[in-house]
Length: 185
Length: 188
Image (cartoon, rainbow over all chains, first blue to last red; front, side, top):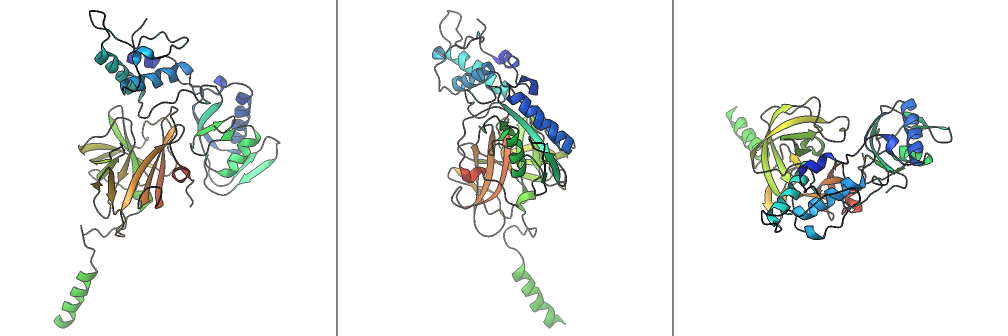
């Protein structure tokens, strides 16, 4: 079983493809993006699917590195054949090496705050995207009716755009500017 | 003539600003930004495109015990920072060089340019009279679902008035601990 360490960080990458989302959210997002494109808005999609395996590795690496979890008691995860506990030459648990390997993973991931164990991204039901436009935006809602958004801000924080997104089944999480999902979480 | 000049000079001296002799007004939008270190480069994002190389920038490090680091601007970065999320329009980007203190990797810090009074520590907080109104401003960070909300408050965080707010995208999910006051939209 491979030992924990920064080599794991390359595995299970986050994707930015809308095709990695689950139906019907995938089609909803594509329709919303198409409407934004026709309206002349600029959209940059950053994250869509975050594999559960990646979240698992990030969560437990952070916990072990910060000594808030016992590495010998980390629950296993399907598809992640990782050995969290490092041993010394005699085969005994090496706490320092175990913590150091987890800390190296934390650094390689760029983790600052404790990662959550699951989210709409792991369920393929969320998309992070930066949206902006100039002037007034006239965009068609899901009923094919044009909606003009003239008030600022001219970006994804605009409540008028949130209402349009909702007609497509793409719901804004207001506390996180780039984040839209199937249910606003 | 001399009789007139002496009282005039006296009046001008009385009206002159005290403290560090700064006369520029502090603007929260252009005087505050976000700095973070990524891949060995400290990058400042700020709505101010007029900062010269060598400009001193104070960094409020928002770990549980807040601290201040000092940096200088090395150069402008026309292509922006290497953050996972593109920055908003109107933002300028600069590479910083740390000259005093430390900045934890990747963690965002609030950058302060030309405050009315210098930043100082008060218990676990960093405080400053940024705008010269003789009241202290406080700094705060909290997490939403996948980002950090950075705020500056007139008086104690959450009980005073929020003066400045910026969001720092993390690119992974975290446990949220922000309040509604932290994340409320900015009203123009």
